[in-house]
Image (cartoon, rainbow, N blue to C red):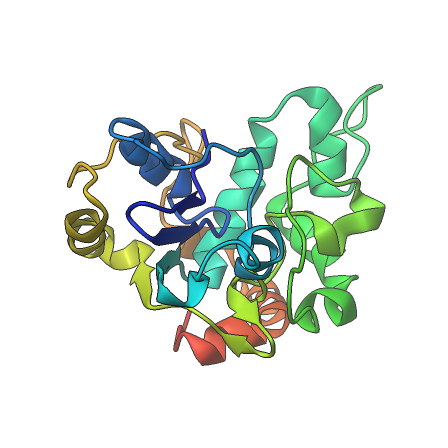
Length: 227
C-alpha cells in the first residue's frame, strides 16, 4: 500500500509511476510505524496541500526515484497489456474489446504523441493521482505524466534525494538507511510480458524514439537522460 509520509521519521516519499515505487512501498510497509497509508500517487505539491499547514514539511527528508523516459514508457505499455480488459482501452487509447486488436507499441506511441502539447507542457501535478484516467483525460493518467511534474512545487523541483532506477540497489540502500526500511527490494511488478525482451531499446525505431524524446523533453533534460 502507498506510504507517502511519516511525521515521526520526518520523511516524504513521492512515488513517480513506473520507477519501482511499488517495491519501495512494500519495503516500507514491513516496518511502517507511523507512515500514513493513503491510496494513489501523491505529488510533492499534493502532499504539501494535504499536510503543509499542520507540519513543518520543509524539514522533512523528501525522496523519489526516476527512470529513463524511454524505458519508463515501454514499461507502462506492457503494464497496460497485463491490465484487465476494461482498463486496457483507457490505458492504451484504443478499444480493445469486441474484437478490436490490442495496439502495437508503435501505435501506442503515436497515440500518445497526439497529445504531445498537453503532456510535454505539464509542469506541476497539484493533486493526488490514482487509478486509470480515461484516455480523454490522458494528461492526468499517472503513467504518462512527466516525472518532473510529480516533483515540482512552486515552480521548482523540491526533492532532497533523487534516486535512479538504473542504480536502484545502491540508491535504495542509501534511502533505506535514512528512513529505517529494509535495504533490499522485492520486485513487485514485472511488467515486460513473458516472451518479450526486457531491453526497452528493442521496441523503438527512429520515429518512436523521437516522439518520446519530445513528449518527455523536460525529464530528459533535467535528469540528463539519453536513449
